[in-house]
Length: 264
Image 1 (tube, rainbow, N blue to C red):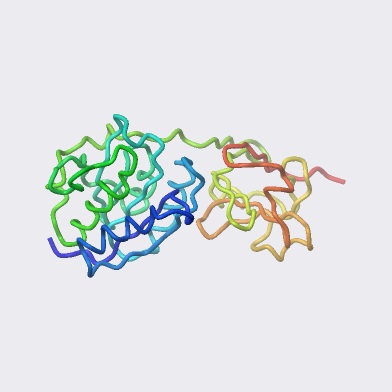
Image 2 (image 1 turned 60 degrees about the vertical axis):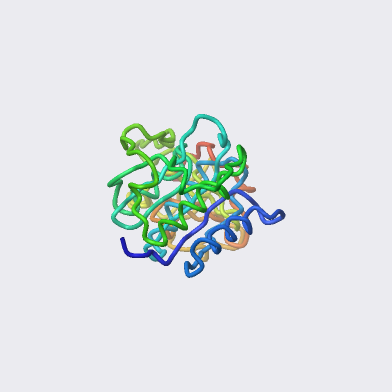
């Protein structure tokens, strides 16, 4: 296989320790010509859903490459490390649901292997740091052009761990959807396609509060709520000049109801 010059990293490692640097270092020692894109290392610790969402919404905009994701509260247990092939690139990480939305965003799964080939891993694999000792060295070897099939035995894609489907209940005059993510600005992204907004009027209610249905933040008055389709094609709730998550008192996993505003 031809070399793949790009590797991306998405983790919950934070920036206060040397974990990210260690992964960069392993890649640099094995594949010094590879270029690394840090997607984020600030996924909330252990929040697999948040990591999966960030990864899936980012990889379509990255160059074709090897995408490493590590949000791995089950590290060192019986959970598998896997490599996933798609038409749009390769994914490497734990088999805990983290990679599957990204695989779908890259065209769907074409092959999966369990990462067990000893020559692909660190000489000594820590029980608690597979990002450094399993996933980074595998990514480096894939970037050098080594075939994924040599990283370990094939896995049935249907046997991969999947996250529960987020809540989305459609109803007359609106819908209830699970909060998928809250971003750095306090904007609330819902597990609902933006197309659901097309049938709603210009005034709506969100969790009982008045809001406008708009295109962007400035369509609401200062301090006001706006419901809009975001850059990922999902419904989002924002406050013009404020933080919607704090105003609404919601966090990822909470249900949020968007309905037609009552007359009056």
